[in-house]
Every structure is written in structure tokens, then in C-alpha cells.
Length: 192
Image (cartoon, rainbow, N blue to C red):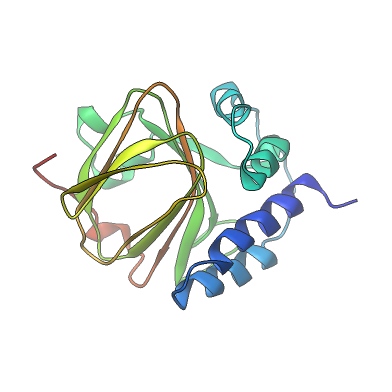
């Protein structure tokens, strides 16, 4: 039987296998090489309850591996977030500098934005892809607004302004950065 965390890594790799850019399959290969964490993380009831409503295979795998996923609350603080951006999301960094799978070229993992939250307009030098696995949100990319739900892939080239707004349910996505993954290039912007 495949361990829940290993199944999660495979389901996430499949998401990025579908990306038609060279970075997607490279990220997929990296997810397939992530070692299983040695220590279980404390459960996060908000994350698990949010995942219970999604039927996407990667969301189910994420739910089943929940205690093993290293979630962090309020990650915008590393970008000098304003009060408007505090406590709006969780991130589980799986691949990247100092992560479960160390990499200097990819930063990837999972993203959960709480319901009824606006994540402010921002940009960064890293190319970024989200694959929604649960919930839905209005997304602005380069000032056009779209509503995305499970199975949708959203790509932001370097420095493309983007923001997200959730409604009555949280947004859950697999996420990756490539190119210049230095968080020092991250900036909040005026707008939407």
C-alpha cells in the first residue's frame, strides 16, 4: 500500500505533468523525489475541514496525508505584508530552499486561502503556476478577472500582477515558483 504522503506527492506531480511549460514537468519530477517527512505535523482542523468538500484526487490525497504536511500560517509576513494580508492563508512548502526536498530552482507546495478573503494585488520575478484542487476564487491576472475552480491551472509569468478573492469556501491549490525564486522580488501593488 502506498503511504498517504507518497500518494499526495504522486497526485501533485500529475498536476504539473499537465503543464505545457518546461518548468511543469521538472517540478513534477521533483515532487516524485520528495522524501516522506520523519515527523508528523500537528493537524490543522481548518485545513482538513476545507479539504473534506473537494473530490479532486489531489485534494483527497492531501486530506489523507494531512498530518504529514508542514503547513505554515501567515506566510505573507516574510514579504512584509500589510495588515490586510495577515492571517489569510496557509502554505505548505514541500520543494525549495530548506524544504523537505531541497531545491534552489523550484519553490513548490500547497496553498490554502481562507473563505471570504481578498489576497492583495502583488507580483514577483518568479514564474508561478497554481492548480486549483478545491474551492473557487475570483482571480485577477494582469487586471482581467476570472473565476477558477477545481482542475483549473493558472499561470503568472514573471512580474504579472495578480490577486485572489475567495467567497464562502476556501481555495486550495498546488502551487509552484520557478526562475528567480528569491522572495525579495515579491511586492504588493495598488489596484483591484
